[in-house]
Image (cartoon, rainbow, N blue to C red; front, side, top):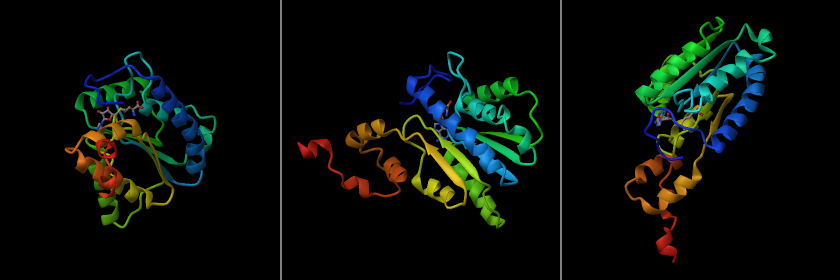
Length: 211
Ligand SMILES: C[S@@+](CC[C@H](N)C(=O)[O-])C[C@H]1O[C@@H](n2cnc3c(N)ncnc32)[C@H](O)[C@@H]1O
């Protein structure tokens, strides 16, 4: 999916499929990790506004519902569940906050929500810098990384997160737009260097070199 300018938009069929995968995974992840740890984190690095043009739910709402409506919820009251929603666009962040307030006016004490208006990678690196400064470790974290295209998703940051035990990432890896732009764009080289965590990809012949 390429960059959309309006604060909300209509979901594609692939968006609904993506949400179904997220839902099924979290239904298992929350009780498994939640029953073994005092704190777990769900992090939505590209959170979006929480609602679509047709009223469909966005990933932050889906994730919260997965936990709140879980049949095993009463067995998980001693674990703290921290939800971190990072969204770069101010308007979308505001919509997300109001959707969450309306949808979840009273949350159980062990569920905490943080909505952050910022970019995923620098924010994540700051969180990890702070933890590491105090010798602390990231709690078991499930990160859903769902950009529109491929920008703002440096492999180095993902590698850093994955170095912690029990951290998992679900990435919407938009290979079609990568393939399209990797062929034609010289101005996006830095974005691709970050995405792949290497400059090696620059050696791949461009289409015109192969003809
Ligand atoms: C595909 S949408 C997310 C949809 C949402 N995950 C869902 O499933 O409902 C991508 C979102 O990421 C935001 N975004 C783009 N670049 C970002 C960045 N570097 N850091 C954080 N958010 C970003 C966009 O404003 C947009 O709302």
